[in-house]
Image (tube, rainbow over all chains, first blue to last red; front, side, top):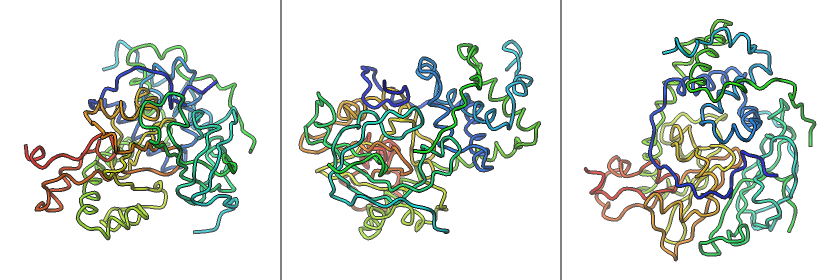
Amino acid sequence: MTKVHDRGGWPTGDPIDTSDHPMEDWELHIDGLRAVLAQKGLLITDQLRRAIESIDPPRYETMRYYERWTAAVELLLIEKGVVTAEEIDRHMPSAETSA
Amino acid sequence: MPQIATAPQRFNPGDHVRVRREAPAGHVRTPAYIMDKTGAILRVHGAFRNPEAIAYGGDGLPAMPLYLVRFNQGEIWDSYSGPQNDTLSMDLFDHWLEPA
Amino acid sequence: MTEHNHPHDTPHPGTAQNAEPGYYARRVRALEAALVQKGVCTTSEVERAVHEMELRSPADGGRVVARAWMDPGYKARLLANGKPAVAEMGYDVTDDMPELVVVENTDQLRYLVVCTLCSCYPRWLLGRPPDWYKSLSYRSRAVVEPRSVMAEFGLEVHPDTGVEVLDSTADVRYLVIPQRPSGTDGLSEDELAKLVTRDSMVGAADALAPQLAAD
């Protein structure tokens, strides 16, 4: 059974959207956060890839690129004991109040 | 730069190699579509720490030789629609290759 | 192979909530806030990292390609050993950056670069990869039907020209030197650099014809 991230040759007739999309603010931030955490030795690229690959297949296929990064960064930081899920939860704005 | 432990380089440019078929549970960088296929060594990139171990917190040593290996598309895919001698190359680690 | 430590008992974050619109946007803010509060990093560090990434763009790759077009000796060094040749042009190329292998398109053979396993891309030279490069459809199709994929970019490959797909599976990044367009003999290096598009350095397009770039 091929793993979900191992995409080469998967049957698909999907056309390729060749257009560019500007990055949203949160995407820029997870991109930057990853770079900062990597510089500090808290995130290693191969570990990030492993964490992304561990996302269960139905979610992997429907999540957007930076959503997978966010889930993976969080998983790794919790795994390493840098932060807990509860500490992140505490800072979550509710859906109604967030901008 | 300090020397790191490095596995011996088993292949040279021009050598024919087959990609092993393995299904480890962990992180690997060998795509399934290339397993069991036979290609030729194009370049020797040098030795790199093994990402399969680094992915879980290991140091990835000994560093493994990494090669650019070229394959014919007609041999990879049953129904390749382009010219049969179109090619595909990828970087593969020494421990995934055996002499063909 | 070495033993692996699989954190199976760590609950996966966001499992129940990922379908909610805007969830990840809020999660990133919360993650950053939690890390800042704990002193792991600062907001200005994150902003600086975002800014540094914005400084890298395909224009840098374009300058390297233009130099290669004008100077056969430089091109030979670039094809033999990518990182030192890029450093020759004044870029800060450090040891921790992945290796760079540069290939060139000819009438006989042209290249298409992909990362089927994730999105490996020469970011340190070109900046972030385009959305299409990261898409599941590109990752699936580029290796098995490259000519169809190139056609979706408006690129018709001559039947006598071979196509080689490069799947970036490890710590090496690939850059394609597109063919120098005809009618460019009198152009300066700066003018040539403007003809080199991001997509042409991945192999999905040709460099621009001079009259198109002037528009």
